[in-house]
Image 1 (tube, helix red, strand yellow):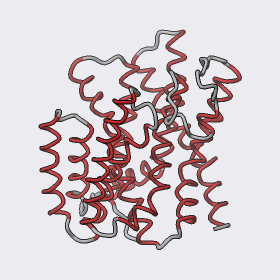
Image 2 (tube, rainbow, N blue to C red):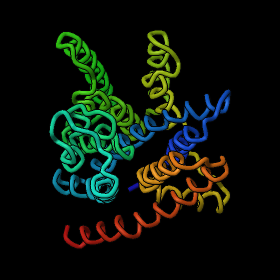
Image 3 (cartoon, one colour):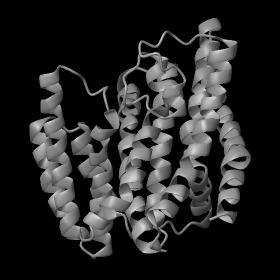
Length: 326
């Protein structure tokens, strides 16, 4: 199966952008620097697009059965996720006991069964340790075998994108009539971003990247006219164009490539692991006045340590065990 170097680069950039956003929130930055780091939070949409591309490509190129595909994909994301959840249960549930009352009475079941984004909760019951995206990834990976059968061509992937967008509009209308918010069944509203990646995948497979980029540019102008440039839909079009335009990009410097390879290998652990470090910083800031250098240092060093522990202590052993049995 082909390895897309550009997706490795972009995934690292998206990961670093998200980490920088959360560090900047603790540094209380102002002015242009704050605006820049605030925009970096949109890196999560680039994550979704890359995942949509690779999910469809991996399933199509390897001829996996749906069950085998689900096992491999969920084994990649769930062990580290549950390691973070166990940490949260120990720290917030048993030691600090600072979790608020859950109106639905679900409590930790929200995180154990990954349903926190389907049934709305308040404060920590909604997004503890930045885990809100995991339910979205799980939903799309479950859908991938079905989508791969439906969207076998570039043209059918465009139809899939359009249908998904129309379904989201329909959901918004339904929610408005029911007087409920997107906090209910939130992952349904994020499938569209993965669909952008699916379109890019089929365009690359059929050598229609230029044609797809032109069409996406037109769609981007439509979303821009409907809202503003930094809307998630507009940026998703832009990110997908960047994915397509960078397909043949590869750095010649071996040291730069090694740096990206290492960061990409740990990108998921960095993505989830840095949240634990941010929570530790928040607890320290509640009791002490920390200088900016200390906050940055704790964030960088702490994230590095937590990511290495999660990768070598959780991800690799679990996936090695599963590979031996599948």
